[in-house]
Image (cartoon, rainbow, N blue to C red):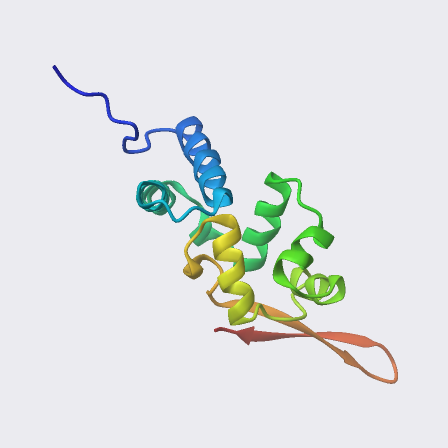
Length: 145
């Protein structure tokens, strides 16, 4: 007789969402129980594998990804700014391509959204406002971590 496994390789989005929810609950428990830690590690590995195979993260730059994740979670900028320990103004600059994500923010975002740091640590363009006497011009700068 076969024993039914508690977790299996993720086969669809519904199962993925379920595992993400379970993982979030386990992480929120903040337990040192070895079986809980092992369960967190297993779920993280399963979720990361699914992400690598089924995600459009590579098509989105880090700011688009962040905006998308905020929308999916109905997360307000104020709430995210608190998680990142930054001001709403700094977060607004990031979301408007005027400021880059710091390494610390990348670590916090990866942890918060249960993604690898690489999802947020990729090249994207920043926009720098340049004032002139006649008008404001936008200058696009290449940026990478």
